[in-house]
Amino acid sequence: MLPPLAAASLVVASAAFAQTERARDDVAMPVAGKLLWGSDIAIENRPCCEGTGRADEREAAVLAAVEGRAGRQGRILRLRLGAGRTLRFVDCESSSACGVENVRVHRLAGWWPGRGYYVVGVSGFAEQMGYLVRQRDGLIVRTLAPPVLSPGERHAIATDLLMPRGAGATEVLDTSVDPPVRLPFAKSTSCPTLLAAGSLPRWIDDDNARFDDAMVATDEPKPKELSLHLAGGAAEWVCRY
Image 1 (cartoon, rainbow, N blue to C red):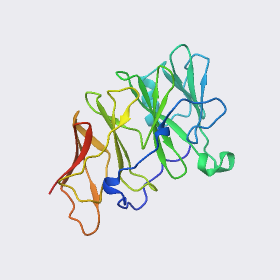
Image 2 (cartoon, rainbow, N blue to C red):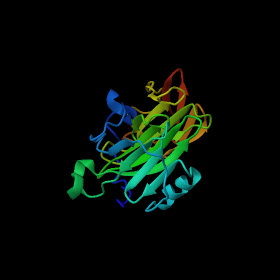
Image 3 (cartoon, helix red, strand yellow):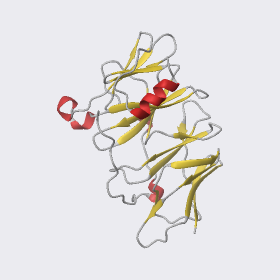
Image 4 (cartoon, rainbow, N blue to C red):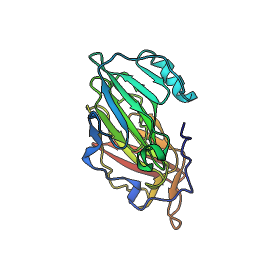
């Protein structure tokens, strides 16, 4: 199995608040015979799911919690879809087999029963992603990293602490709509222009999340507390010194 990618020396992203602008092709259905974002994914007309094998400790716990909905057999992860179908992910762990740009390892990271979405963590050669998979039909929403769902399941935050996108790149999803959509960031009135999250989020309630660390430019004071506040269909960084 491809080892987890460790964060290199973290740097502050050059974009304000490390917000990454991404294209609209982040929502897609798998197409037979074609890679999707470098991943080998296909919808199969077969039931799911057989027993597990080669799952790491974290994935094994998730698979046990959703028994019958997902299964792993070697390099293959399968998720149960509606209408008796299955979504299949095939890992490629070697750049000699699929090219460095298509190295992908997929791990089931969660299941949102209230929203009907699986969460899949994806590791590449020098990057990570998250896939939200709609259980009903296999539609996939690509995110920066596996998102963390809020207590009331109205929002989710994905923070990518790995290079090369820049440490702490963060996006906020409105999960009350289907498929989830990315919320814009409002201009912060309390945080410096160049700021990035230095940890994964911890939800306080549906509209507020806290981060244990922050990264700022060398000439900026570091906040003692960094949080995200959601209001009016936008997210805003909040710094307290």
